[in-house]
Length: 85
Image 1: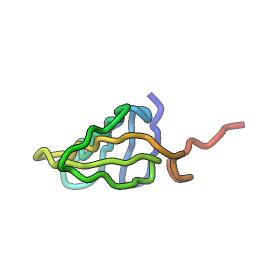
Image 2: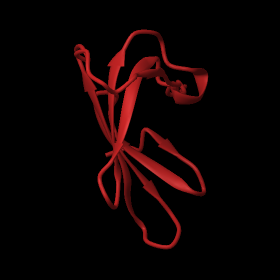
Image 3: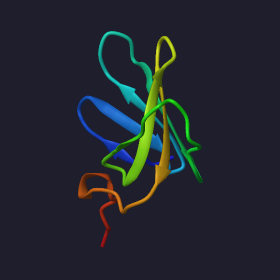
Image 4: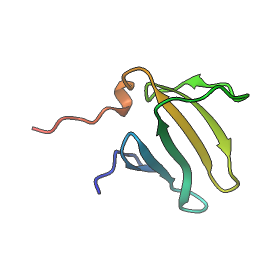
């Protein structure tokens, strides 16, 4: 699987609907799990705009964070795949 994004500190694997972020550091492990949904139902959690073009909320689940996102806008340039060729 080709990484969605890679830097010196992190690797992002998956696609827009479901991906994980692996960060290098103390424990090389999954730090974030991102999940896209069709619609975020009204809850006590407030959503906020994010760089992937969605409104999302985050919950800490011990060793990693769960981010639930409803896409609403195009992603920022940082998150768009570069065209080859």
